[in-house]
Image (cartoon, rainbow over all chains, first blue to last red; front, side):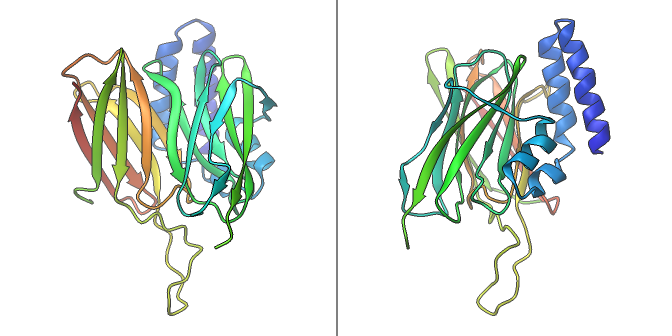
Length: 151
Length: 106
């Protein structure tokens, strides 16, 4: 399944090169729909999760923003907002290296969606939080630290 | 199939639509024991999709892991959605449970 998905992603990239970006993103979203990337979500390190999810590593970029509380009182419900000013966003992922399995979610962004996502996550301990944005020109990341108040 | 798990709210912000999604779901990671010391089996949402009702065109899609909070909340911003458009939101979890709901945007 994973191999199939990579083949499809590469196919999408080829279409993208021809300039049919909207179509390729749609194909990508449809393909991903049936195929939860098990290996990436079960990874126990940030680097491994990213390698398995995006076949690469991310370059820090100040245009990837994380809206997070400095201190979280309740580790079961920590609000996080990911956004970016980078153009041509294809996907946004959220990772917490302090959790047993760092990859929290990956969102596929079509032309009809702004690269803005708010959600709530679980944290087991104080940790960095990393947002990874995939665009047509590369993979970029931003990070912030959340301190978990002792309960 | 689960029923009545989804609460949707939409609000127009200029040309954009802010869509808020709330899902009633335990999001059990599979790493937790109950009070008797028995492990609680994993049950968590793996995919979430927002599409145009009718054509089925996918606008937003996310894969989730075990550490999205219980009763997940997502807020996103959609572009170029005309008044009266019906959106469909659906989720599916690791045990193949699922639910969907539609909302007409104003």
